[in-house]
Length: 330
Image (cartoon, rainbow, N blue to C red; front, side):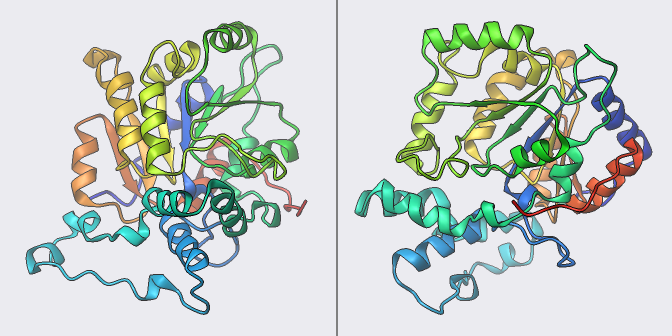
């Protein structure tokens, strides 16, 4: 069972690593989710996107598939909180549903539906994103606290949070088929002299350019297979300086599921292969995590804490002395 709070020592470690520039936030869909108290309206999570995609594709008007989903399992599974992930159904699998939509119809239709379901242009950045964008900057000519932020999200709410804070951001979008040799060489040169914040969008991006016909995104199962085939390749995959930063930092997983095969493949290839003393302790902030996955990741030096993301953001602001102005719609 995950602890529902971070200890003082854990908070000190996270804050110290942030201030020393050795903490890398790894952001998932949960950083854009609506708050429990209704004070922030965000974007739907992956399972919700999947159901809404099916509703649009099949023309199911006035039907909420989430209210119809029911899985009957053996009593041993029902009675145990350890196996909650085994009770999910295919309708909530966004990669599989997206695969059906694209291969029965086409990518253009899939993209149209996704942009309707994820209206980031009608949302403001969440309090958590705005906190990350407003970390106290160190002295001039030194690196910022977050030198690298990794996200699997397609939207541009994080970019807008940095624009609002007037903090420069260098965005790198991982191509599904990988970087070619020239691109890798260019990135290596640029990153070696860049001292600002790097945003690495590992699953692509599409919402900031709504006129682009075929943006680079990883969304269907076929996309994930192609992505993993290229990203594990040292010549085409994650740029060397980004890989080094990930390996030497405390990873702070925010709103991100650690169950995904794509991330677990990357973690095993980048982190687990390091000598034990070179593996840095990391943290994941989730709500109601499965005890199975809590135990699984604890053995890999990733501590999962059952803490509300926005409560975490509020305490982080207090510990770092960050004040947030009122957000403004674009």
